[in-house]
Image (cartoon, rainbow, N blue to C red; front, side):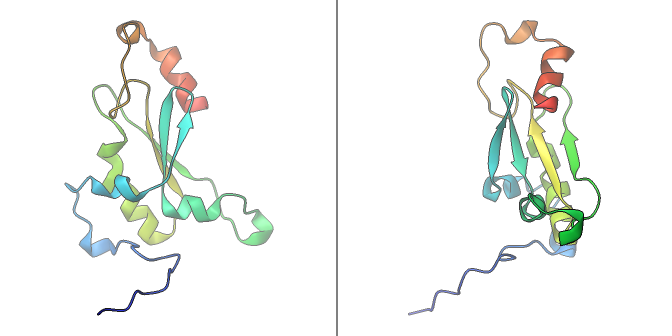
Length: 121
C-alpha cells in the first residue's frame, strides 16, 4: 500500500522543459472564477499572489491572456503552465460564448464592447 504524500502548495507545479504546447489539460486543474459573462482561469502563481502587497513581496502586475474569435482560454494552457513554473502570476479568460461557455440566440449579435465587459470584469 502506498503512502499519500502531504499536500504541498507547489504539488503539480510544471517543469518548464516538460511543458507540452499541445497539452491543453493544464486548465483543468486550475481554479476558475466568473468574469462578467466569461470565465477566468487563474494560474497557480496568481492564486498565491492574490491578496499580497508590495510589502509582502508581490512584484509587478499579473499577465492576462485574452483570446481572439473562435478560441478560448485553452489556447493559453501552455503559457499558464510556463509562467506558473517561473512563479509569474497569470490568468486566461474565456470570453462569453467561447471556451465551452453556452451561447444563446443573442450571441451572434455580441460586439467588441460586450466582450470588453468580460475583460474589464
